Image 1 (cartoon, rainbow over the protein chains, first blue to last red):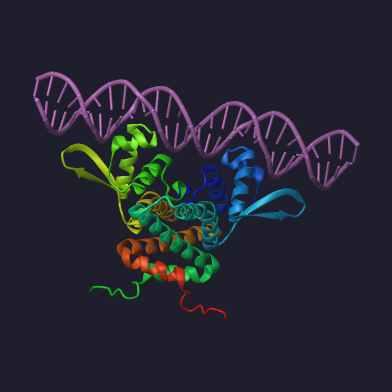
Image 2 (image 1 turned 45 degrees about the horizontal axis):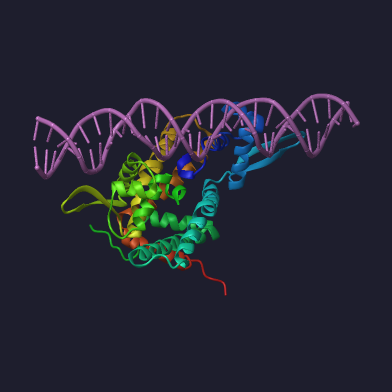
Length: 156
Length: 156
DNA sequence: CATGCCGTTCAAAATAATCTGAACGTTCGG
DNA sequence: CCGAACGTTCAGATTATTTTGAACGGCATG
């Protein structure tokens, strides 16, 4: 799933381990179980916390840090969507706008750039709407996945 | 945009060059303009043809191969969606189903797997619907991007 | 205010991904 | 047939990414 989510192998493995574990795990135990260095585990956990799919928890009388996965998979999905939008999508759209602002492109080529900007703006609108209201977005997705589009009638 | 689309630097550059060019380009001209080897250009173009976002065209009286980009950006978008689904998404969903078929996971962990399967199945349904009917999908996206969800009323 | 325990950092090492270019097969004109 | 023009392939070189592990700083405890 790494490529799909845009995260690297270790990060994916740390998350998978937490997903596969009921309780909380310490940094050291994670490193041990996955046979990776503490340094790597530390950085991977930071990345996962940045995404917001892993949380640090306290254990009374223990000064180590423990970690658990965000329990709701849909919440994870929207968190990852948000972060990837920020890292990859937004800079792309900015770049296109920057290109369009220059007087360079003409004719067919400019048309393609404009179409690209339109597409990305549409996708951005969809993603923003999803991120604003995850619950109803989830319902909308289920609707689209399971029923025909309005205006399109099923042949029979 | 490379990371966003899941293609590497050279492939992205070849595509960008074709997007920025009105007419058709030969393999050699592409390699020359981008300062990459013919071999690299050849492989990149193959990848782009696999995605279906670049087409080979004939030029009368010239036995070299010439290439042009798919002119419609939305069509490109759906072609890339289709290919990434095939390469990254489908294997992931298969793996989850395989895990669920085994008797290993119990309790909370199994619940997460089931949620994950549900999420991926929903997304798969959405993507399939999009790929079946790109034109109305595009309209649906514009709708979602620009208007409130059904059942959610705007405050004012 | 030393000592041990933790987590973090980052330069260097290891690994993975990408790119090059020489070798090769095909096709076509003569 | 021959040779030249092309595109493709893939082993090896190069470049980029990831991982390690030693060094470090903070902090709680005695």
